[in-house]
Image (tube, rainbow, N blue to C red; front, side, top):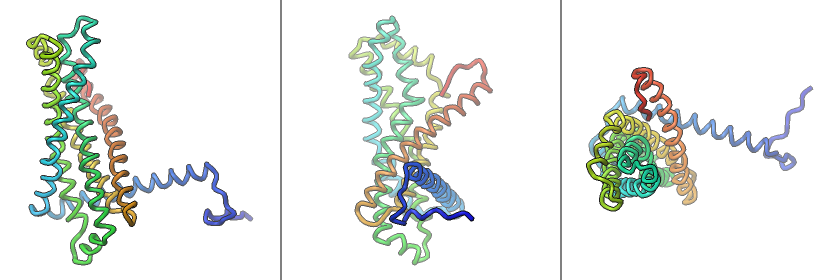
Amino acid sequence: MAVASPPASNPAFHATPVHRVGEQIFDMVADIGDVGLFSALTISWLFRRRPKWSTLVPSFYAIGVSSVPVVAITGTFIGMVLAVQAHSQFAMMGLATRLGSVINISLVKELGPVLAATMLAGRVGSAMSAELGTMRVTEQIDALSALGTNPINYLVVPRFLACFLLIPLLTLMADFMGVIGGAVISTQLLAVDSFAYWQHSREYVGGMDLFAGVFKSFFFGAAIALISCHRGFHSRAGAEGVGRAATEAFVYSFIAILFLDLTIGIAWNAVYRSIWPQAGGLI
């Protein structure tokens, strides 16, 4: 007859490293499933009832308008840094005039969307998680439910729409400022010929390259909103719990951004090559 193993709460039971790893994996799988269920509820409420403008406008302003300076400054300095770091290597090979193509295609395809999403995950995601976590701790979310208002429809859907719709626009802002910053440093400080700089940029950077970066940003925005709101909704009690929820919102959002960037890039390349086999453009 098999004897049941002692529970972990028993003082005589000593958890081994294997037990601890198993518990962490189990908790991670449970969290992923919980986020999936939370996301399904949010999407369902998105189609069941249209949010009111009184809840949408503040979210659009806080997530979109207030993030413009941060994203613009980040994009500008990324373009400048790319120009400074890449110029010496290209000049050694006699390809300094092609610097514009490398800077701009790196910005619109990869660095612009990812860094804009990362900045927004730190600024917007943490703020949303802390705000909703405070509402959970002070029982404001329970009060909404008691008054007959669905908390997900009232609190999460406006934030989700704001992130999903506005982060692509902020990505375009980051791309534009990065292109301008890289061009100013390259042509004014590093003495790269201006005509050749823009000519090579025009040859190597096309509309599909810009669309590839914007396309990814939709998924980044959705992931930031869903993960941050989920962590806020499930915040633990106390100030420590709210702080932990805000930290987890940024960390998990950043991991999701990198994972989505990889998977969408692989899928995009497969589709792109199947439609245009002769094309070499990759996401």
